[in-house]
Length: 315
Image 1 (cartoon, rainbow, N blue to C red):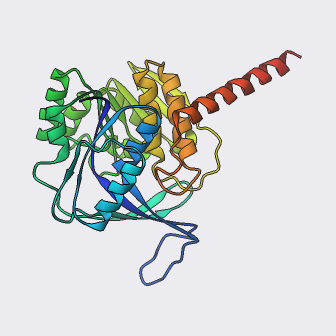
Image 2 (cartoon, rainbow, N blue to C red; image 1 turned 180 degrees about the horizontal axis):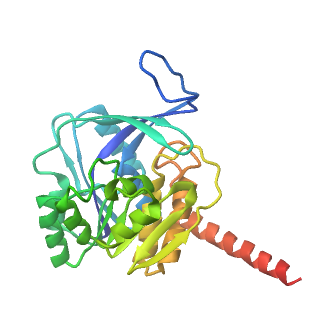
């Protein structure tokens, strides 16, 4: 099959605690004002991309455990294509407890050992797409072989990041991987960690020396990009934040949709900011991930507001 996006990565099941007065401390019980239990991980990416009107092939592994079953049910309810799902007759639990604050989150996670032959490896050998999306930092021999296979079949490569202790100066294989992707999408904290830079713009320039297009997601500060040495900034949209879980994943979906449509980078960043911002209006990563129609409505309202402002300025 041929997809718009061939998406690689595992599900997680998120236990989300909100309205916390502070971070948990050893020996002290802490109560939250709000709680949700929702599918997370790459499920959020898959839902956000599908809501952008893209045909998404999500290659993922699932076990016989209750968490796997709940995510499979939720995926089918969302209308996600399950043709690339791989099922295993053993537990494959991937669970995260999230302490969610308006601008940041803390995580406690557990995962069972994954399968030897994963669903992404099978999918890459059998299917094609306009772009392969890797929603986490991935490098090493498997990446090297996979990216060669993708290139030979005419597929572009987009990579997100994740919380990491890796640094470019100590990981030459990571440097080589970033040189082989078309777009790299870390957030500001991840970019500074990877580069060792104290300031986000410096991290952007360092990553831009490796990858042709780097986009840094910076929450309320908006998004930055560097392409062929040119730096671009687009501010965030105003929104009342409830839960930031999955905001970066929704940003990715909006950005990728606009990028695949051939829009200018400034417009791609704007789409990403709208999707990421709107997704924070409810608890859970995929709950408020916007649809294509919602983004287009926001852009239209933004255009009307700009027109009214210009008209008022002429009076």
